[in-house]
Image (cartoon, rainbow, N blue to C red; front, side):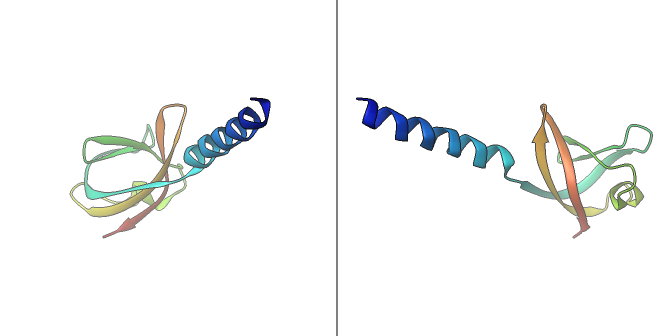
Length: 83
């Protein structure tokens, strides 16, 4: 039993670590930008941006591709490109 359990637990831990670190992408139009809160909304999803990134220089209605990861239940934009 122990010979089976150790590899299974290790595989499970590696699987969770890989999925938590992976990035996701979404495409759509910017619906709203909050420069003071460093957030913007695409497809009814709120993203938090680095205050020094180009994402807050974009405008409402602009089509974008957003790469992000989840951190503490928040979507953190790592890259925002015009579509």
